[in-house]
Length: 337
Image 1 (cartoon, helix red, strand yellow):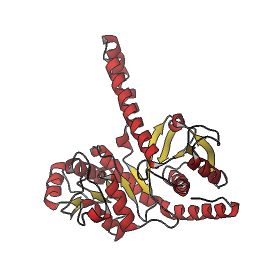
Image 2 (cartoon, rainbow, N blue to C red):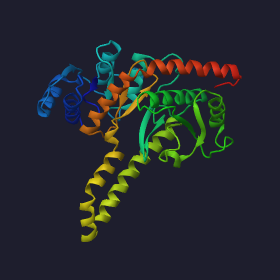
Image 3 (cartoon, one colour):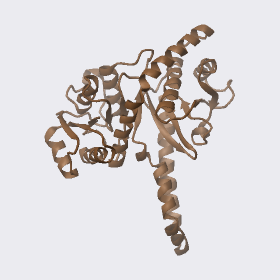
């Protein structure tokens, strides 16, 4: 796994700690990419380098840095790490750094899969009976119908191959369940998906994110990013509220002590760190992008997710199913803008 050692709000220390944990606990081999001296020192602090090789990359892309092809730093940790995937020296890439830089560099250096117009970020959120995949969650703020159709196929394949959900149910985010609801974009996408071979259940609404009604929810990146961040903040706020109320009286504190194991289990189930990051679906390679606030646990699970992504063979299946969707669209006479 090629790992960007510099990306993220907390710097290389937590990345080194997460990489060491991934090698020790998961048996993965890691190429840690960043300024040699800095990375070596953080690895020493973390007790490495069991199964870890340092790859020197002197430059870094800042978390808030504006990214264009013209301003990309040729020897940044992100670019050097993606090069390792391109050249076959690594099987997958992980970064908790600048999302726009990761997306741009991956698309530019690896290229997109056949039939894919725009790669999409997919996020996994917990629900009572399992997990739901959302995409796009931030790579594409403005989408065409074709993009959402591709997202539906990519999400279905990823959910089936990596999360092992049989025949995943796919829903289209809209403002009402009726197919007449929504804007012109969702109406057009609904028509194509309804005639596809996907297990398409129709439109879904915001409250279906966590109900288990659907396994994959398709939306544009603007909507998806807002939904994901709002959900993460809500979960964190609820845990804080529960903690405050349980500490309000001695009796409640005693009850909390007795239920401590259950609360810890709930926290693990809703903690974004346990899911690691968002796979970038649609590029020729396996890339996972973590949250900028990732701690060492999130880094470890992001590296794990990248390894599972590679082992799943998702990309070949995405290409095959997108070709089938295109053929079905042509046969039905339904256009796609």
